[in-house]
Length: 125
Image 1 (tube, rainbow, N blue to C red):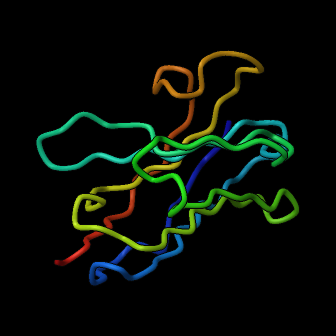
Image 2 (tube, one colour):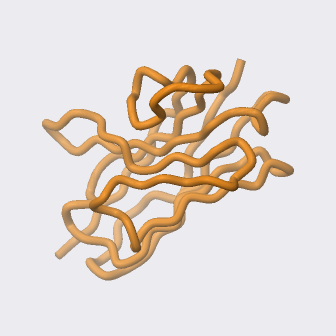
C-alpha cells in the first residue's frame, strides 16, 4: 500500500514558478513509476509527466515540455514537479500517482494504482 500527499500548490502570476512535491509512504516507492496529472474545472484529468523508478527516464505532455521538470528522490520517498513559465491554462488541481505496474502505458490514468488528494495551482494573467 502506498499513500501519497501532495504539497506546494498556490496562486502565482503568469510567468512565475512553483515546485510541487509528493511524499509517499511505503517501502516500495523506489520501485514504482510516478506520474503527475492535472484536472481543470469541467475537464477530464490529464497526463502531465511521469518518471521511471530510477529517475533515468521522464516524459511530458507537449504543452509543458521545456517548462516543467519531474524528478524524484528515492531516499526521501518524494517526487517533484518543478513548474516554470506558468500560464493561466496551467491552472488545475495537480495529482501525483504511483503505478504498481512494471510495464504499460504510463500516459494513461488507468495504469496508476495510487493517487494523492491533489493540490490546487492557480495562475493569474
